[in-house]
Image 1 (cartoon, one colour):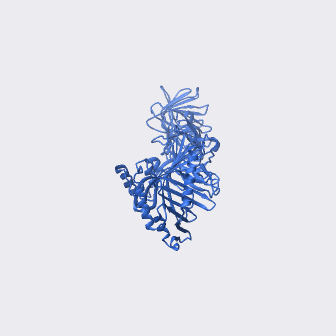
Image 2: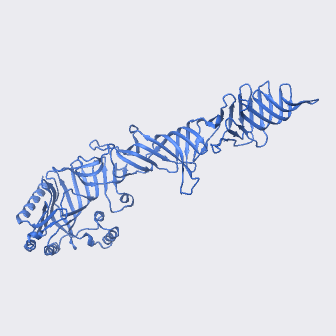
Image 3: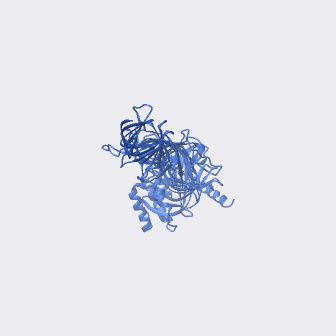
Length: 637
C-alpha cells in the first residue's frame, strides 16, 4: 500500500493506493479488519500481465473484500460505468463480484432494470445491447454476457442462441452460432434461423443461415443463404447518410426440389431483401407435371415472387442449354405435323409457330391447370393478348389470341385470331376463329359479289357478334385500343358491329370452325361460316361453306366454297401466288377475265408475285364434292 494508515480506538483505517494481486485500488476511506477491508468510495482497476495495460476499471464503487473467502464485492456509486479497456467495452451493471483465486469478475444489476453493454471501439459505432449477467476472465480477458435477448445491428435484430455473447479483446465479438435474425426491425418480414453471425459494428454484420420459403400451401421449405449482410442505400444524390437494408443471397440446388408453388419447382440463385416480403429468384423453374406423356424442361426464370401468390413471369424462356422454349402449338416442315409444346423446345428450329404464349404463369390447384398469358389479360381482363392453358389431369390444351395457321400465302394477307382446343386422347385440334383475307380483285367483280351475298343470304341466320369470344378475337386485329373499346360498346349496346376503315379487307369472316386433319396436312371446316363484311359492306350472315387451308409440296394453299343457295355459289382457290375464283354468277367471272392478263399480275418490291384469275366450274364442284363426301364419312363412320 502506498498511502496513510490511521490507527484509532475504533479500528484501523487508511487512504491511498493499494495493490492486491493484479488489482489496483485507490480510496480515501479504507476500513480494515483482520482479513477484510471496506471502502465507501473506491477506484478499482484490474491490470493485464503487462502492468501498463488495464483490463477492467470501476471508477466509483463501494467495496468489500474478504481475503479468507477470496471474494470482493463492489457496488457502483451513482451512474458510473464499469469499463473494459482491453475489450473496449463498458457496462451499466452496478454490482460486481470478484472471485480473486478463480480470476473471475462477475457482474449483475440491482438498480438498473435494463443494464446494457456498449462498445467503445471507434469503428463499431457505439454498438449497444442489454444483458442480465456477465463474467470477465482475467486470464483470457473474455467478457461473457448472459441473458442477451437480442442485439440491434443495422436494420435487424439478432437473437443469440442461449442468449450468450462473448467479447474478446479489441471489441471482437465471437461469432454467434445458431442465432436468429429478424429483418427488418420495422416489419419483421423475414426470419433467418440457425444462423452463423459475425457482428462487426452497430451498422454492420455478416452471416449465413436458413430462411423458410412458405408458398400458398403453407408448408415451409428451408433455403440456405450463404451471404447475409446490410447494404447502405441512397435514395437521391444528396442523401449523404442513406439507409441500411439487409440482403440475403443463396443458391437452391436442383436436387432440393424447392416448390415455388404447386406445380412449379425452382433451382438457382435467390435473394431476400429485408423491407420486401417477396423473394427474388434468378435461375430456372421446372413444371412438376404428372402426365408422363408430356415432356417439359427447366426454363430461365428471373422474377420477384410473393410466396403467397401463384403468379410468376415467363418472358422469352430459355433452357439450361440456352435453347428457346415454348408454350404453344407448332407445325413441322413438309410432311406437315401439328404438335404442342409445354415449355419445351420445338422439334426443329424451322418449325412454324401456330401459337405461342408468354407473360404470366399461373397454376390453379383446384383445376390442376397451368396458364400462361398476357399479364393485362390475366390480371385485368383485357381483351388483347395470347393465353394458353394446359390441364395436367386430362392433357387438354386451350389457347386464345392471335394464330398463324402456318401456311405461307405470299402477297395474299391472312389474319387469324380466336381460340383452339386440343384433345390428346384423339390428337384432335379444333379452332374457332375470326379471319380476314385480303387480295386483289376487280372492283366490278367485288360489287357483283357483294350484291349476290346480300341478295341470296337475306333469309340466313345473322352472325351473333354478342358472344364472349368475338371481342377477344377482334382485339387481335390491327386497331387502336380506343376504336376497340368503341366497337365492343356498340356490340354490347346495339348488338351491331361496325367495321373501321383500317380493317376493310376483301373478306372478313367469323365462326370459322377448323379442325386439323393430319392425313391431308390441312385445316378443314364443314360448318357454316359468318360472312361479316366484303370490303366495307356489311353482310352479317351465316353462310353454308367449305373451307380448307393446308400445305403440300408446292407450299401453302386454301380452298373456300360458299353455297349461297342450292344453285348459287362462290369459290376461291389459292396456291403459289395464284388466286383463282369462280362463281355461278357468270358476270363475276367475266369481270375478272375482262382484265388483261398482264394487269392481273402484281409484283412486290421484294420480287413476290400475286396473280388473280378465273377457276373452272369443274374445279369448284370437285372441291364441293370432296368436302361433302368427307362430311358424310365423318357423320357416318
